[in-house]
Length: 238
Image (cartoon, rainbow, N blue to C red; front, top):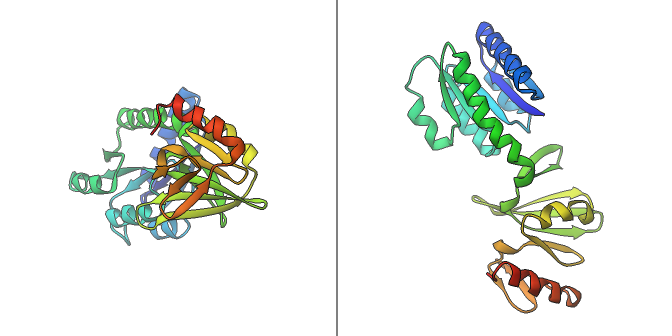
């Protein structure tokens, strides 16, 4: 299901957007959940993660639209943000925050439908490129390419994820490695021992017995060495 939030203080504009979204989903057989917020402060304080798209009015009563975008990006790098405005001034500012699209008010139906079609092709690819976990009561979508390795700690899995600001961020969730192994194996991961499923391409260094991820050293189990060598040979080494 695609989750979309409308952040618009004008009730008539919000109603029109909701109407257009219902038309588009019925025509394209897409299940969609639409959340409406007429107060940008409420939206930010109760951010309904995970979201696939935010239709955000630049003109807001309490906070500038670009400030809202900046705050969204602070805790959600993946959501597609579409700016709605009565003028063109905000368009250049949106690029620095990776804004997905920009639409003028009153929003043209065809322009919105085209925007949704562009996004739909990306949504279709999400399951193979991302992995969703629930950590500390928040559902997070992790890009597989950013996951360095998954570590087993008792009944928990710890996802070690590359992060631009923090270096490595950890997400600890209840789970079993066997439940994610197939999906991850098809995305360049290899189980080198009982406790680690590693993203081979993200290793800083690989020796006969060990993979290195920064300061972390992960041993390759003796029983896995033959299969791991064959795996490396199959991808042409590193």
